[in-house]
Length: 137
Image 1 (cartoon, rainbow, N blue to C red):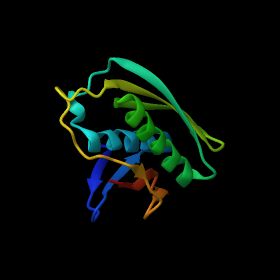
Image 2: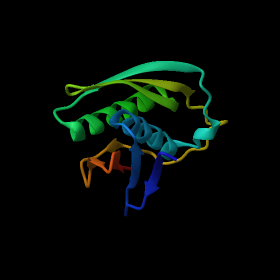
Image 3: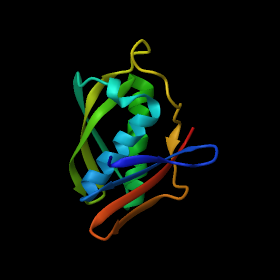
Image 4: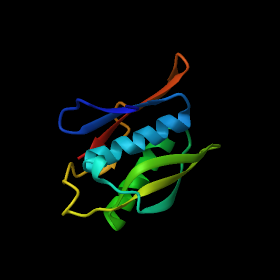
């Protein structure tokens, strides 16, 4: 699996990896959705485009994930599959395939408030990108 939950006292964390930075960002986004519900129960019923900007890779990751938090909070959109279409020059564009949260089918997971900068990591190691992000819950 390209992401896993990491132990964090009082909050929730995700470690994501990928052969490219785009794959790692997509895995981090899918990991975020796994905190909200069982992603196996999410259907690919609609697709939305998401964009974010940041001054560096770390702020770009936080801003991207916080855009996903905002979209979930305002529209109830859950993502099953995330595909990053472009990432560079301080901007990211991604396609999120999923559906709106349905309490009848989606077990409620954590109530995520925001991605944070606490212990944030975006790095390339041994030809693989590794990201770690902690979410305020």
